[in-house]
Length: 442
Ligand code: GLU
Image (tube, rainbow, N blue to C red):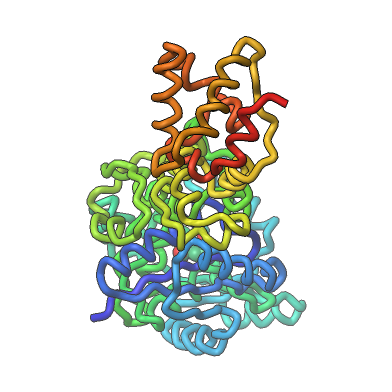
């Protein structure tokens, strides 16, 4: 059996960090099982779905490195839904209902007033053919409900939540199709999961009660249900489902210099008992992925943690993987020299400017003699493999300076900054002529 997962976003907006996490887990699990990860565009809602969001979803997944084995879209599958719908209707598992939204609202209020749960009373099931004909003659088209089987308990062993049990009698028969013929999410999703041979549905725990309903749909269609893993939701560092998280996506990550590897490494591990580690390669994330390690508590997403992880990822990136994002002329030696000081790849450009110059050298008048001595040594000494060591050793001997008093004035004069990459790596890249010019007083 081929393990097959799917990520099923509705193209009504950009992916946010919560969706991205779900997509990642589906992808990683499929990789771990040698299976397939599919993208399914849930675009049954023609009014709210937009092509630009479909394109953005594809682009975001590509940036994240979550390559799909294939893609389906629900708007191209309506014939399939019609056929299943007709069969379910013939089997008496789908029925027409005519209540308006206001009537349903009133029913719910009455139930609440009596202290009862707001469950649909199935009044439409009691209508006779003549009743229906009369209503329809008034120009009222039906919407359609799926008739739950109240006699069979709904149970499944959730890969994250463990054994789950629902009583269908405590749930409303879900509306699956609107009066205008358009589909609600529930039935098409179950049909697609069956038709696409999806073996594992990994999604947020906000879908748990949908799963209960969909399990009855699978049974009614006479098809095997996939396995389910419902993950705890993502919350912000403040412990709440913030508005900010809902708008945080790939566009923002790219803007602030976050690497796809950092997003993957963080989102694969938060909310699990595994540590968050700066893993550039997906292999380690795939090898350690285990639903049993997912907790029931919400996963906390902290942007500062992502930024920290990103720096550790950047420190590991090799030249080839960043070359096209570096300033023209910057080579492997320059990249490797500045890499340990970067939080983002883009910051390499700042250090390239420091290497290339011109820089605003920082010179303390109190260090004038010291820097003049440095310039003199630099002119005289052989420029070997480690000119920084040669320069500082000579200056130490001559001036007696050591530590900060020795190094800081040199760093300031040579780079214009107090901190930065190891001078031993940087000085050969700045080169003798530029270094000499920066040391000599003008
Ligand atoms: N389109 C649904 C959503 O975005 C898919 C849920 C599912 O994974 O079944 O919520």
